[in-house]
Image 1: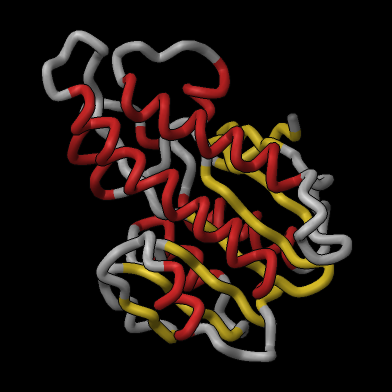
Image 2 (image 1 turned 180 degrees about the horizontal axis):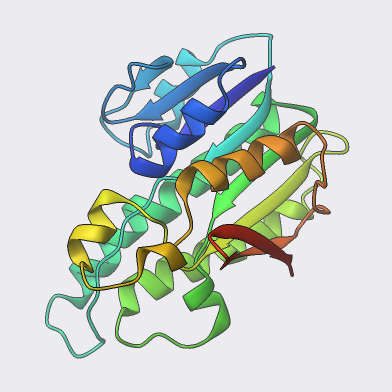
Length: 222
């Protein structure tokens, strides 16, 4: 079994790599993850380089896009365009690359995972306009990809909708919050692995709200 983790050196990406232990895992990121094979990129949009590095007949059973980032700011801010461009590069471009790769690199009955945002999916978020635009684009890409005729037979596109993930960066940014209400990244990864192995796998095109209840993730399939 093979998994491709785009963003495998980030906090959630490292959990994905760890939890998928026993699979042949490849991380795509700007930095190396010592726990798996790596493709180090300089530009997330360099599809040709990435495809040349992935030139193999053995396809991936699961492609997971967990690359991203967060920046706040409203439409009034003078740097609104720069913020949007940054969010686009960090969230939309990796998701689009993974979608493209899935047309040739994903196996039959494979799984393509996008990472969206429940806050953006659920209601307007004008205090983080660049982030909202980027995540909305990811949600739209997921919808379009799920109905594409170019994906392998019986494959599924699933979009994660976390609220807040319990990462070191989030703890540092919000030290007074109740961390027990945040999604544990290992639990998120465990959920994805179970779907990849066919357990309680959501239908193609599903959006999954990662609610946290009593310290555990209670997914709502939307």
